[in-house]
Length: 252
Length: 90
Image (cartoon, rainbow over all chains, first blue to last red; front, side, top):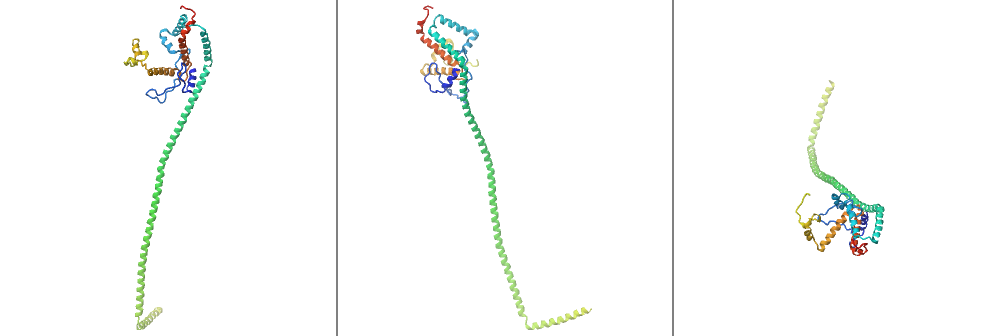
């Protein structure tokens, strides 16, 4: 549990002093091997198991096949008795100091361990949550960007149709213009031709009139007075004959 | 064990070295300053990554270091503590 606190605080002070006997450096070296693991593998959940706070579990596992469960404890007792009897470990004032300090430490750890552990866990969680939030925001931004990109691509497809419509418009304008000009040309040509036709008609009519007038004039001028008297006499004779026949018809 | 290739003695791990090969194994280790420093760093990394650099570490990680410090300091002070012995002959 203390190691959790050490980890949390030590990661705060990046460049601490030289390696003391009890100070732990907080420098996790990444990419030391040639193979780079990305994404970085997650931290293991629990550390190596330790019994009674100072004896690693591997010792117990080592002695288990030969001496069973009580083996390491017997080893410990035997060692302790040997050290005391040969006075390799000497009992003096320091022993009492150590006992007192040990008692206080063990009491403190047992009583406040879980709460300190929970506090350190909370700090860690906050850090992880912040990083996760950054990652989540980045992810949402990127997905949003992907959506926008897809939308733009869809829009671009529509642009093709827009160009087609515009092209159609332009084609229609050109067509209309062409037809207008065609009509103008036809009208002009027709006007020219009509003029020629009218001209010819006028020509013919004037010739006809002139000829008729000339013939009339020549005929009238050719009737001499003698001919006029003769024609009048003839007319009177004819009229008399006619009157006789009608009188005869009326009588019948 | 699956594959037991013939590894030269120099590259074996300490636990795989037989007793009679211990001398040659020791002789082949790298005792230059660089080698010593890298060995210390490797040991530190192993201990750190096993006991401290975990999500829910226990007291064992730091307690073992403190206990080792206590024992080591007792060993260094033994010549001085010798004089506090209760009996002369054991």
